[in-house]
Length: 168
Image (cartoon, helix red, strand yellow):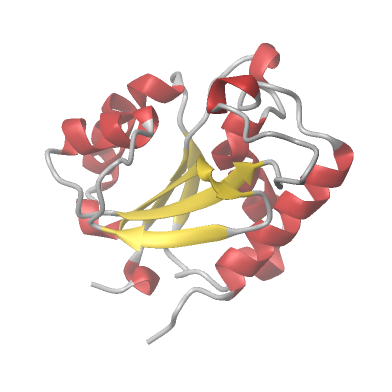
């Protein structure tokens, strides 16, 4: 199975004004970016459908399971986009068939689908470490509002991640 066979893209995050533009909502922001940037989204399969989950991050699995059933999509044709506090801001990883690595949203999807054989675009949100700043715990930054500078970095990441999807 190849990433270009993806038919459904689900961005994970938390609904509600309180969580808008927080680092934990990088999946929602990626979906917004795809919808707003047609030249980028055209690089995906013409049948790819980007959606935001309508539930909190930790309950994403139920949404994913209902949605793939509704659209008749196999888990291997699904791409989940979510934040990853272990990856530095400005970086991303595309993976298939991997465990959740402690990400509650990904774990919820794995449990609900009863498989880890789906695609994930993991968006780095960890602040860059400097000599003056200690390594923060995820809980210290994931629900903070994204700075304008960091939002620009994330938009570049979204563009690069989609532009660099391997094609057959």
